[in-house]
Structure formats: structure tokens, C-alpha cells
Image (spheres, helix red, strand yellow):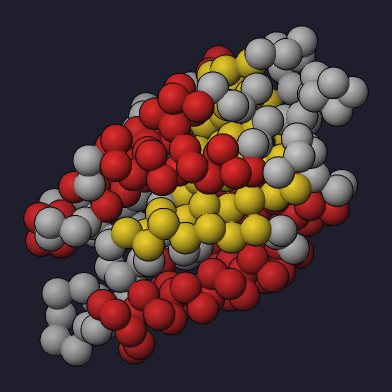
Length: 275
């Protein structure tokens, strides 16, 4: 393929694409930049119909995967993406779940094996900008599949040398604090949950904040497409003001830059548009 401006985003599960990168995917597609979403697993460890959890009677992993992949395609349509690539690995489940031990679980696949497949996609699309999670799986999330997605993306970036810029998604601690304050002001019951001081990305590591406010409605529609997992998406229970606050900007930590770009960015393609 030619070297047209291209963004590649690597996520672990169907629905992960919405919150931290749905805005940039929609924005850059609209700007004429080629957008590629790579989803590593099929989401088998999600909720089944009626909210049946993995491990409970009646949970059909294959049916869950089929449903979640259909929802993913609907989400992609709302965001307007150019390309969706599925690696097709088995969802490993949350840390400590029995599913972690399945030999085919994504987290158990040798990094070099999965990284080689991702590297082949990088060779094909030749993205200037690549985005995935940090080493904690995204602000301290720690999900085995998120951590594995980080590992294989780092390996593919290093082995191919193709991307000019490489970013981790970021959840700024200051933004988390503000969001939870807003939720409490609106009387939303958070139970006993209070984010710890080390939850999220240290503010000093955040190098880019992209304004995606014109795309909030698309992000919401994309997220709503994943209705089978709606019980797990607390943002749906937030008032509109808090949703706008949470969805209107996306933050990133830049870990590789081969071009002349500012230390603090508002555009992940800064330094590349005129190259």
C-alpha cells in the first residue's frame, strides 16, 4: 500500500475501541486519514444474554463471541472506520478468572507469535501513528488481554520500525478526579468505590490531549452498539454533563516520535501532515 497518512489502533476486546479512542478514530477518518482498528480477541468472556456471567450455567462463550463481534461491526460503522482487523484470539477473562488458564487464551499466546501477525498488518497498512495501552493495560487496569495487547504492539513497532509516532492511551488522574466529583455532585451512587491515588495515568506523562467534542454523539452510539455489555458500562448512568466531560477529549502518552513535533500535542499527526 502507499504511504498515505494512517492511524492504527490496537485494542484487546470488542467495545474497547469506544472510550479512549473512539473520538480520534471518528475525527481522523473524517479528516481523510486512513483508520485501522485491530481487535485482538473475540470477547468470549463477556456477559451472555440476560446478564449471565462467564462460569455461570447457561453462558455460551461461542454465542457471546458471535454477538460481540456483530456489535463491534456496528460500532465501527458509527465511527466510520476504514478497516477492521480481527486477530481472533480467545478472551482471557479478568485477572484471576478460570479462563486465564485456557491454553488458547490470548494472554497465553507467545508474544512473538501474536506480534508477528500484528507486524504483518503494520507492513500492509504502514501506519505513521500507532496507539495501544501502556504496560499496565491502560491506566492501571491490569486486564491480562490489555497487557498482552501492549506487549505485542510494542514488539511489532520495534520489529518493523514502521511507525513514526507511538502512543499509549492515557487516563489523566486530574480528569478522573474531576469526573468523580461531577458524578457525586449529580447524586450518582458510586457505592464504596473511590479511585486510589495511583489510579490512572500520572498527569506529567500525558503528552497529548485531542479535542473530539464534535464526535461525542458518535462515540455514544458506538458504545451503545455494545448493548450486550451495557450492564458493565457505568458511563451510561452518568448525566449528560458528565458524559460530555468524559467523552469530549482523549488523552495520550507519546513514547516514540521520529518527527519534529511539540512536546504537548493537540493532534497525533503533528509533524506528519506536511511530511
